[in-house]
Image (cartoon, rainbow over all chains, first blue to last red; front, side, top):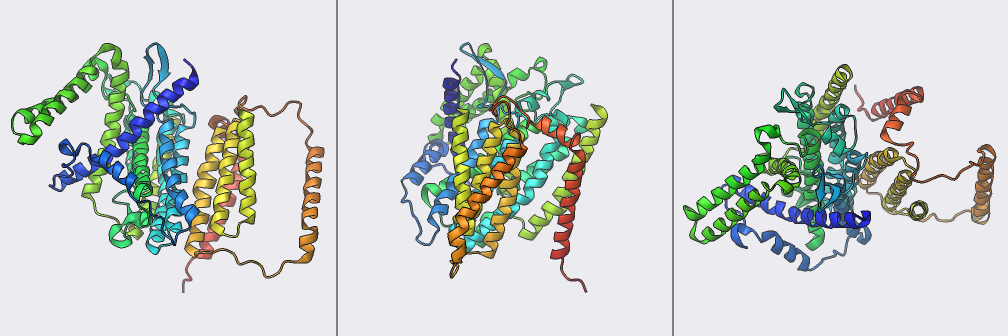
Length: 396
Length: 168
């Protein structure tokens, strides 16, 4: 098939799914935090607040687009564009699964495969600093400026241990391409322990994984490192002066960065789309069992203890989940859906971990944050890199 | 396609460079420099050096220029005031002198570097792939590489000594 046509189809598909997912991560976050804090969360728009992201988007799009009179107009308007563009570009180099056949067309489940995918992701996140720093500066507001300064200092500091933590598994896989990195994690120790990044070299990359996740929190300005938008000190930080869709652009960028960094962690440390145990122990049936279990739970609550007004939606939702699970059993679809399931569930778990931490931990103090980066993360990541380098030199 | 991209990004680089010099406001200048670096990265990509392109973006645009921007914001530097009067001499013979200098330089380069038999071919070679750069750094250019590291270390030490609080 024509390369351009194929790329166009894939890009359209990925863009649609990705942007929708970004809106729904917001809903999931609100729901999860609400339940952690023993609240209900959004439940007015549609069943269990299912249409909330849609109406939020409509609200943000139709709001009056304010342009404060005291801002530097060019940079004020440029900042959200830069932020969201650098955040969205990352998905272009992230693979979602192996090579597949769709209607006789052989293609890879990704937009593009570069031999420098990891570096592209790092470069995009490095350039993302400009969006935040410029937003803070051009707003001509002291709180926004402080937020922008904090964000840029923090992101530069945490980028170093982040890059060193990434370098550790790359040493083992001997590549900078995410696809090749995942392929290097194929196989099993003793026939059942997956050769995922965190299990290779005697489990030493687990330390790199922990460092990576901590730095990822700081890199995406999330709690406990969200000093850039500490609302009890800085109003809303760098986006104080932004409203309507420009404000939403910063949020989209934040969620897109989270997805990118979780996908990167999945590919480098958690084996990408590879299952956690071999297919001969029934790994291919796990997607069906998961969906069937979730659907069964929903139907059970719909039939029995659920509230009267939720019962119909619980039954319908449960039926849809069981159906999705059954689709995972169709043999011609299995090579596409099962790797996709593993990739999405690992990335989804990491995203859930983000939200979980946000609902649990308080915010750091700024000096603690900086001292933690330079006094702890940086030395530990260097030692970790040396240790893994030594192991790689000895055993390969 | 390659020639088109080359023309586009070369133009952007030159325009950004011009804006950087002529702009009065430090933030605009700094961001124009980022624009120059970004377009240079694309040119490196076209020349088959993906690693150099990514390093250009990560190191120069993503780290060094962010620090510049950071300092400019911290100092809250505004637009430079216009100089009270500029020298008449500079106005009259400035541009001719620059053109003469550029002309001499290009003539010298033309003399010392013999014209290549073939044009630079886009997309054909990959001298700047991660493997090639790594091999070159750790074999052919090992000594210059290490010497540069020592130089950077000395610069860092100097900065630390200068910025250190006075101890009594």
